[in-house]
Amino acid sequence: MKNILFIIALIASGYSAAQNSIDALRYSRNDYAGTARFTAMGGAFGALGGEVSGLSINPAGVGVYRNSEFTLSMGFNDYSSETQYRGETKFDGRFNMNIPNIAYVGSYKGDANGWKSYSFGISHNRINHFNAEKRAYGNTNTSTIIDDYVGILNSDNPGTGSVVDGNYPFGPSEAYNLYLIDYIDNLVGYGPRVFFTGTDGSNQFIENIEQTRTIETSGNQSETQFTFGGNYQDKLYLGGSIGFQTISFDQEYSFQENYTYDRPAVSTDTNTITSFTETNSLSVSGRGVNAKIGIIYRLTENIRAGLAIHTPTIMSFDETFLYGASSEFANGDQLSEETDPSQFGYRLRNPARINASLAYIHKQSGIISVDYEYVDYSNATFNDRSTFQNDYSMQNNEIRQNFEAAHHVRVGAEYKINPFVVRLGYNYQGNPYKKSLIYNDESRSTYSIGGGFRNNNFNFDVAVNLRETKIRSYPYRSADAPVMTTENANNLIFTVGWKW
Image 1 (cartoon, rainbow, N blue to C red):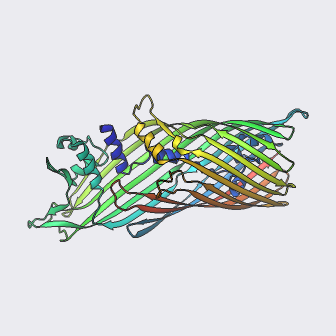
Image 2: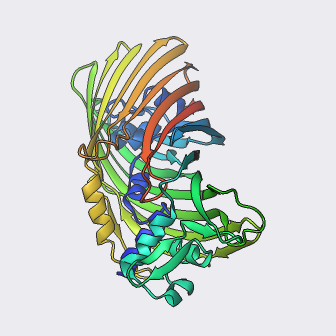
Image 3: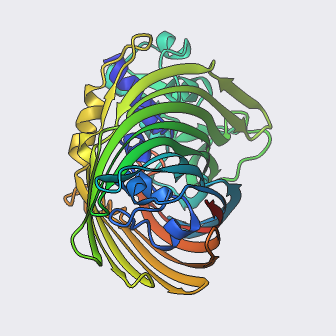
């Protein structure tokens, strides 16, 4: 029972980086980045091959290479958010630089009458970035985060000594010790201090609660992939790879409530609480491994078809969590509490993927390519580690209840006007939430455009993509109004490459 309450307390306090369905989705939903060419064409390289970042989609693409190649990319990410909460709107943004791709492919001649060439590739691509900043602000007189913590305590009805000693951390114990919660009686149990007595003996009732939530995140998820494949008679291309992922995620969270009353508080009101603030910081590091196999087949001189299967990525995470809270009174007094750093470790298996693709190549001057990807997000599964044993059945049931299979489509086009080239792309990621959860539609649409210069052994490419995502969330479990956030992520990528 206490384990369940512990998890509820974590979620209620804004602790969202581990051991719940949102976190399983965060590390399972790939937002592929890479070279400017790959980006400009929406990542639709499953049937094309010959593109280092496309090996993340279909490793058979390494067999298309006839020359060795080295590429290096530089990316600039511009993130902005518009958040609406209780009739108020806030705008925030962040900017960062990154290296979305660096890769080498070596191609070697084989038997001209059989396997004509073999290729080996080492590539490092960014598949997720977590840089964001979101701030929600609104006013209410009917809802407070303290109701969450009262509910947690009354569900277990512990003695006040247990609460004071911190046996209900990350919210309930701190709120009680900071005088936001009282024990009323055996019939009512715990309750929020919804009114306060002034020094003149009159009661002061809460007239308004000003709420502010701020979330700042940073980090990325990258994959280093070792790929090997071959080319049989310029007709059949096979490839396989092993990928090693690294994940870093950091979050700074703050939630504040400022209280005003029907009779304004004055400095002599020693019992009048004017604000409550809780903060937490989370640092996560992870690593994972997966395998991919793929095939590309030339149906005609101009048409290619591709198929690739990605195994689940087996991930292991370590994280550190720190929680603090404070309260302030009308007379200027302040109280604060902070937990000791908490260490956690767990495993996550994210879903397998199936990619099918088709491409049309017109006289080496034009390309149209379409990829389809199937991912069942309900198959993500948490597991414990020997040093951090825990029962994750509740979290895994939450994943099954919230998520379902999603369908992703990538479309790309390229046209060459030697030595220049222009490109367009579109990437659609389907909603991972079940259709029954009608308010949780987190489908994504990304539009991209780019171009470049190419000669026999050198290329310089540039791409821009624009993505918008709408997210519905609640600042705490019992909140009576949602936070609606529109995120815009714009990326500018430059790539230089050499072939020999």
